[in-house]
Length: 333
View (cartoon, rainbow, N blue to C red):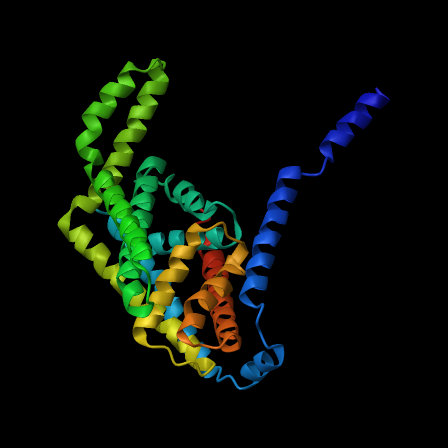
């Protein structure tokens, strides 16, 4: 009995190898990105930049960043309520978005999207499949719009080779095809149902899968509404403008003058970098992207590193605050 107890105790306290491996990988990514971004930094000059900063601009940047949460909530609510069946106010979606960004900031594999899907998909007038479909549509459309903006601006901001331009054009085509495929999904509902009917599932499991499919397609259908699609694009333009202004205000705090097109290009670059294997708060990734974008345009590394780190701190802090409030607001959902 003593041996079994000892064996059970050993098993219980065995180090979580997978968690340790993920933590080590995260540290390697963050450390490698930070090292590469700051390899040519003059640390004395970096301290001068910090001392001479005008932090009033950071208050302005924080104000604009706070506007993003209601704007993103309104945009998602537009998809959620495309059928006009929701009885909840749009603030419900805003807190869901806040929780999602909190989860994405500190958890791996964009777990925040799963978190908001589960929390909001268990209410009386929605379900998980329906909410998940709206999350997929929202993320995919936003990514495609960012890719298009990035590709269009690349040739204006940076002198690139025809080969790279062709590569970015290919990315745009893939993104557009993905969106078109998603929008055509409702027209393929009948063939998909027939295919699922041929599979050797039990009746109970098959009914459950078909019910999930119906709810998912219902969530996708919302964006086929012209009013919803136009509204989604309008909100996305507003979100892009507001976040680009916040980025610009943060740069001004450290006396960095960035042209509007360059700010927009940096914004889309940071947004697309979220597709990379990331770290909590995108530590190291933001620094690497900012240096790679701005250094070839003649900006010194030291102001860029301080500016993008200050922006990152603002984002992480505000996401933490709004996300914790969101968890509190949705505690009874």
